[in-house]
Image (cartoon, one colour):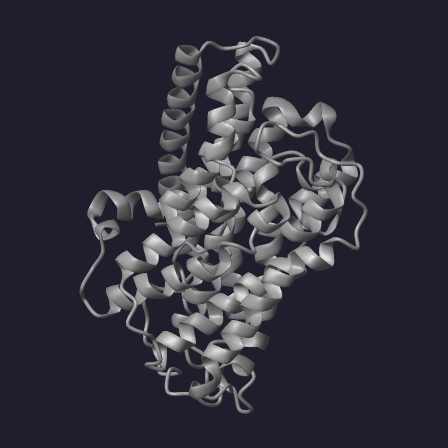
Length: 387
């Protein structure tokens, strides 16, 4: 599912990147069907991040050890793609301050789109992940103290908070608005888009909901909802997002189906029933999904510069451009995973045994039957997200 989510982000960028002639039937149709694609991909990754980190938390782990492993997982690929984007096209248009914010993964705290979407635009999501990683060791003991009987109530409350965010966003200026491009952003303002989609504290709710869903499954409170039915619910949320205003499409209409999907897939995997996504090719693509997510925007931008931004492509040329970008992105992603990400994790991401914390501060928590260290995958797994 990780590669499917990253692929949806890729598809949305194909739709909004001038691949097909503006105003053409092809462009309009693609804008419509992919309106929800990027937002679903991002929300899925943020939920998955909270879920996997909670599921795989190690008793006795230290705050520093956890942060080291997470940074080793994401930063080498980020540094490589940052440098690649700067060399290929971004250096001349990027002020030094913006470059520093991107290098330090602090860009999402700025509401200026030229900042949070500068250099390698998709890396804004890593700015959110950095906050999640910093807070996770502090949030985990609190989540584990919630009584099992109340977990669904807490999950419902966090989901409700996500669904109320578009109402809060109405307090922000409605202008300047992003120029509408078909059905893609339908004129939502830059400030509201940033608050709902980019702002790390808003996206922290998705991460926290993922943590709660992990505890629900671990504590034996999962409902009888199969992976297949949860996938149908997620599809229904996707379709609904096509017809709702963008402020609701961003997260509100899909957060509950996606949270159920993440939990259902994990439950099915833990029960040994498996899913269609568990075959070897999809596992391999899933391993490279983080690298694919980070590099695909650079490939799309550079190829479009080679073609010429002002040149309108025919439908056949647009398809060829998309397939070429997909192929190049996949090759680069697999290479990055093999020669950058994996060696860095092996070299600096090893677990260093530490004595259990005396006061329950670390990652082991102090209560809950799910603190036994049961794992689905490992802490080194790819939970980093996307745009």
